[in-house]
Image (cartoon, rainbow, N blue to C red):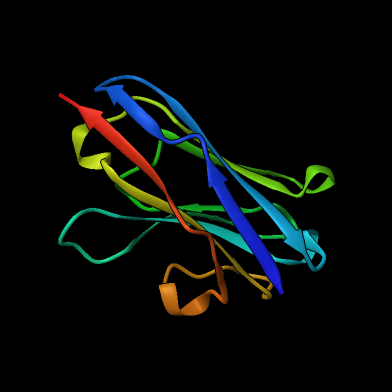
Length: 124
């Protein structure tokens, strides 16, 4: 079992920055691929970014490439999402997720464990 807890959400103006954290506990964090997803009101949960456990390779949705950076610190059992140049369309609840595979996927069905989410609101 893996328990995930997100933090760092909040209200920010367009163009601003936030850093989300996802603290993991339970099984060996370093062996899990990790991902960030978000869900806006009335919309499906969508992929944002993911990071492999084996080589730290990163993957991003086109909508956040060049603005968001995913990273992980296995010694601290923590994953991060640095979000810069935020836009109102980035508003939503952000979830971290974990999966025991080498290469992470962008589908929600590919993840076994989820956090409770943290709200990000970007005002125009």
